[in-house]
Structure formats: structure tokens, C-alpha cells
Length: 310
Image 1 (cartoon, rainbow, N blue to C red):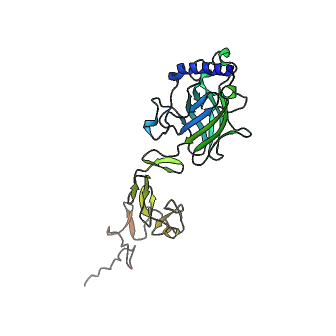
Image 2 (tube, rainbow, N blue to C red; image 1 turned 90 degrees about the vertical axis):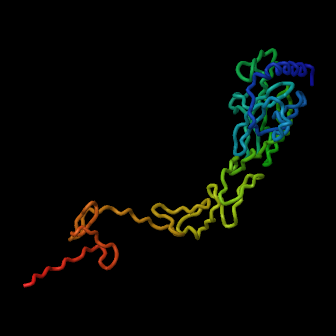
């Protein structure tokens, strides 16, 4: 490295000492750990813990980088270099017209793209007014994470980060060797890409090591309970999804068959001949309700003629 570059790195390292306490540090939910190496500025630490799962490997101050574990999204947080100070992966600007600020991760393409920026280029903190141009010497503090024609950062399915970023003549080529922690916190398990707490396992057994619910043979975990497994033959004329039988509108499951729902009986507005309406009910002239079953269902008893003895 030339004497000019050495002097510039030295000056940045002095400023890094003074801005250390002015940065809002990340929380314990950081998902990225590991290191990056610049031949010009040395090691860059991606997390305050050498092993995020082991407290004894952590520095006093909590910092690090956080990335979504599925799909695509922004990488946020700070990395640390003892020579150039904090490096922000979510800076609100980027160096060229039309570029997108900040760092991005895409699990579909397996690429990490965008920009990080050294906070030491700012007059104070990690945003706002830039430092004096004489001090900066033309350096803008940006680190290009890719993609380049034959360089850039990648992440594989196991969460391993590798590749090279470019940080102009001050930082130069920077090789990344990091890891995205795909493990869920204790007491949670990954379901459809998200860490989810299992709160119940009625009728089954919770494995405390894997935080999974094991159901007996012939049952399936449904809404936190081990229920008898439903097959299409158990849901005639309906559909089975998630161990739940869904019947078409207007039908309900009776036994194993989706059956048409009978309409709700309506109160009568008129009664058959010989009956009268009393309190929304048809009754016979003697006040009794017609029988509902038998050969005379719905009929009132017939009147018998009276005979007069002579």
C-alpha cells in the first residue's frame, strides 16, 4: 500500500475511535456473523460474537448484521473495522445515479448486492454532513457488494456467505467469509420459512430438542392438536386441506358426506282448515297441537255428532 493510502487509513482509524459511542448498535437478533478481510484495512468483524450461539465469544457492545431468512430483503446493521470504524449496511444513499441504496439479500438468486458505507466519511455519527473534503481525499466510503462481471457476494442454501466486494483504493478488494444463522431461537421451530413457537401438542409429544410435535400413527397435527387423519374418503363431495374437510357453501359435513343444509323452518302465516294460529303455531279448535307423527300427523281429531235420546 502506498504511503498516501497508509496515511489516509491512519486518519480514518483515529476518527473511528471517536465515533464508536455515537452509533446506535444492533440488537441480539442479528443473523449474520463472521469476518471480511481487506488487504488495505485488515479485518472487518460482521458481528460482536465470534459464535452468536456462545455468549463467551461476544464483545461487550452488541452489534452485527441482520438479514431476512427467506425470500429477499434488506440487510441492516453495522460491521466493525478497527482501522476505519463502523460500516453501515443500510446507508440511505448510494454513489451513482439510479442505484439502490443499502445492501440486499436474495435467497432465490443466492446473491448479496448493493452497497455498504464506512461511517468515518461523515462529520459525525453515521449520517448527515460529510467530513471535510481535504480529510476524505476523494474517498466516499462506499463498498460495492456486487454484482460485478466476475465478482460479488453470494449466499448458499446453508447460509454461507462468500465472495469479494470492492471498496475503492482505500479498502480495496475485500473477501467475505460469513454465515447467516438459519437456526431458530430455543423454543421455536422453522415452519414455512419462519421461526414459530409451538404452544400446544394435544394428544402428541413435544420433542424439546427439535421443538416439534410428534403425533401418534393415524393422526395429524391440526391447530395444535393430534387429530385423526382425514382422507378424501372422509370428506365426500368436499375437499381436504391441512387435515380439515371443507364442504361447499350451503352444505355441512354429516358423517363423511357434505349434506345440503335444510332451510330454517319459518313461522306459519296461515293454518289449514279447521285450525287456528295461536302464538305462531297452528292449533286445533280445542287448543291442542296436531300430532306430528303417525297416520293423523298434522290433522286435528274429527268431531263426533251428538245424539239425543228420545
